[in-house]
Length: 193
Image 1: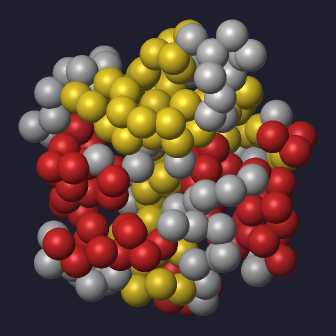
Image 2 (image 1 turned 90 degrees about the vertical axis):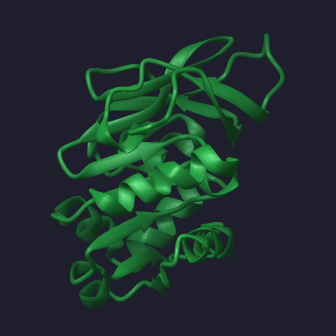
Image 3 (image 1 turned 180 degrees about the vertical axis):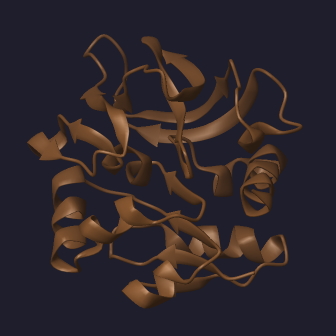
């Protein structure tokens, strides 16, 4: 099985690569369109600011490739947010895979949300053998609004979508690669999809 982590200069790719190695998978870091298209599984990471990350995707033409992928694709953190229609961060137009918007937490809570939070209403094979209210590690100032594509939610100030799924596309706001055994299990589940 060939697993590719999209390397577009806006991801925490080494920690994801190490998490996959612990599962016995040697992932390839690549921005090569052919290599990404030919992968069995694709991971779309993201750390940083939405508009500059989107600019990097456009420069490498990956913005047109990612939505056309047919194998299982997992967006992580900013990767998931960029798969939505738009983000308030930098007034950014997203890839439009998930039909929802990304907005900023209100000033009534500490922003960014950093640390462990629970995920509920789990509704996807991605969460096989993951219990309700499992703790995941998050670092984010923006969140995806709840939608019909939501497969998990979390609460911080308000209830929001902490995971989304549409067809072969999956997105998680939390960092499975930093979320201990449960996060590792989610990565394992993704690799088995």
